[in-house]
Image (cartoon, rainbow, N blue to C red):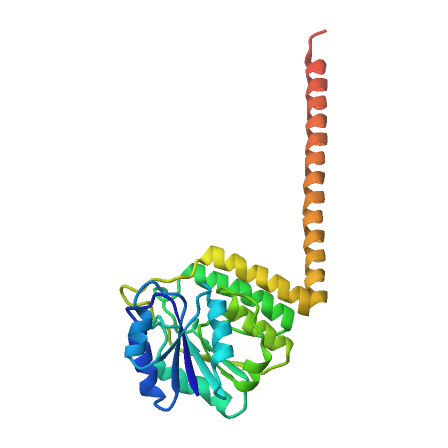
Length: 272
């Protein structure tokens, strides 16, 4: 088993994350993939006992690609290096995978996370993406953007990642669905980043990239849903435009009738 930890400038937290997972899974390999950090994250990870691999291409998707290429174990735990996830929760995520009940298990943060840990913008973005995925694939997922998940060897061998940024979690889910793999979600705890730790996620820029990635994947793997959605959207927009034009025309006619009525009234009242 391998615990793989994506890491970019996580010097305040990375050693603790490594130690926490070592305590929970003493037999597992702890692998930290450092994404060209400018601080001493890599050195702290090595000092804590992790094996460190460096990925120079900036972006979480590239880190995930490196993880899938590097890990040789039958089971891989992937967890962010920011200490927002609880190492103790790993056992409930592992159980469905190690018992062959799931190919991937995703930790659902949304039920347990406080507003300090997951703000309204992040919640809204997550739910918007969820709505599209759940409608397209007829699923009922709760948290596709979680950075805490477990996958088996079959999953790692079958899902070739193509994206390079934070949209990688969405791609993992969509590709797994397309290939008919079994995905389960388990509720987990989620806490705010410790003092000194800074989020690298840009809600709007990364949200836009996630939506573009979803559009490309849906076009490739669910073309009927993709193009039907576009057609419905165009019909709705056309209907709104037609309604607006009709209302403008009615307004012009009513204005003309009103002006004519006022003129007739004025003529009728004029002394003869």
